[in-house]
Length: 141
Image (cartoon, rainbow, N blue to C red; front, side, top):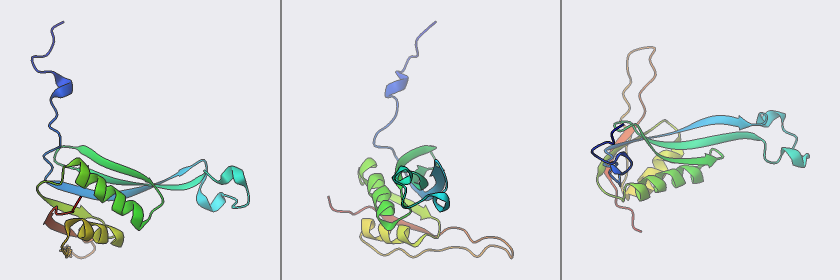
């Protein structure tokens, strides 16, 4: 068995050369759904709905950040901040998300400039594409 010519564990460029980031969130539940939890039962305190806020680099198929917790503006802000930190705040990127309004606010605050979504209407009967904005990071540390 021969070893590779290049060390495979050290071949990733870091910070990643990310040009596009897709922000999204996914729902799941722990133990049981929130509607079935009893607020008076202390055993149900850690059970119920949970959201994972994610940031994905689709070009490199790289998961840049995950923030678990409630679906909130604060968690949107955290995932955007993690992307900024992990990409070292460099480069102009295409930042896209679904229509969840806290992402637009978090992206605008992190880039320091306004961001207008340019969603296309698509054909009749088709869902409009997510809003996108192209901004360079300019968040102060």
